[in-house]
Length: 595
Image 1 (spheres, one colour):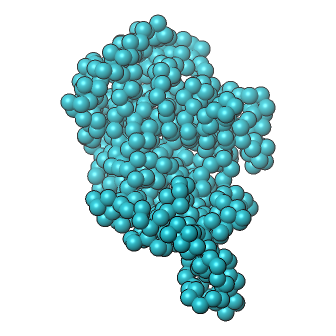
Image 2 (cartoon, rainbow, N blue to C red):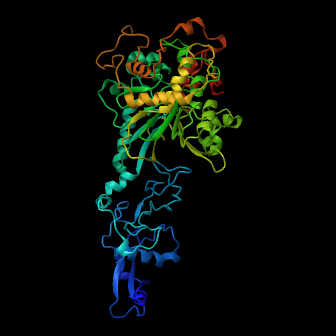
Image 3 (cartoon, helix red, strand yellow):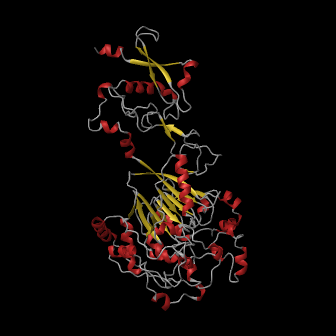
């Protein structure tokens, strides 16, 4: 019996395929004919039979010398009593390359999909083919335990309860998800245009975008009154399209998370200092904040860096004067210090201006070829935000997205040898022909994909709110002792009772009505937003955002009240458009904000 089994062991040998039989060979698949020959007979012997076995020769992980072994494994699968088609590749044997999204073109140090792929760099993963061998079936189209022992017919069995699920492709897909995140640079109120662009990408690529991230200058203008808190030259004051989403006339088709920049309706963002819904399905991350979207952890810092105002408290209150309208969006040490307490991993971090020194990790020479005015600051080491650089070094997020300088730039930051890597991407503003939007493909757990509170961040917020600096004096928060264990436990128990979803959106002022304008005297100041009230009540904290006594009792020092120029507000490449505005403003002092 034993010798008989050995004698009858099938042996597979390669067989050449004549040219006329190559009709089934596709561009991305190569099939091989094979003959099963009982040992001791010739390949032409009586009783031999030819079976059709397909094996991929595209990007095989094994060498060609292992071909016969793979053929034997493919044969073993074909002889199973219940051969199961591979649902990962729909039995095709190859899948779309995740690094280039099937485009065949690659972005250095990243798996981001270009809106308009570069045509000069082939994807090094798939060699420009756009597809790779399916790792689940090794190109055969059948499921098997490839890395284990050779499969035997009598041992190929599944549990009766599991087998029907394995036959269902949706079950396999539910084990892992690929979250597609659209990243946008400076919005400048053009929500309609950005959402239309996303819809176009979805239709042309046959994909579904799960989330939109905006890196500042969002301009959440609800009505004419909000424009008084928007720091831009008069000719740039337009209603744009946010008011439609605030009023409910339109609903954001993609969940949207944004941070603030230096062109914002600062009065509205101050209502939502801790974060909240600026409109249905549009979430403001706060002046500093961390939330979860699905299992992806997203952090962010609003505003831009200005060394003169960095150590001050949040003393500005609406209505703003000529000084406070320019300082209210400057990053404060207090918010950065809270973010520096984060210990759990961050997947994505957003900032408006770039981290200081980030150009050292990318192709800065190519950058200055079309942004020549950046070269001096790069050489002097002054281009970017020092606090953002500190956060980059501390948090080490997987991705860091920025905007502000109205250009696209990529970098790859290796924090220590063999350690965590951060992929940096800066994008342009929303204009035709500009690189303002990009799709990022990130692994995630299955949905639901929705904005949720982050337990650690809530604990940090609760711990530091008692030293919230609200005057021009430097806050004394560094001496605060962190007993995070007790605070985390308290927050966790509250979340278990309440749930992790943020408070519901609610309007606090009338939305813009194109049929008639709103009188400037109809409403003033900054109302208490019900979302913020509910948030503070949940954390058992007092409401202090309308405390104006500090700024009145402690006016800002004279050295800090000088009027800033427009050069920080409109990037340098746009200064040609502002030439007339610059000439009319006697107080302008070009270049001081770039330091």
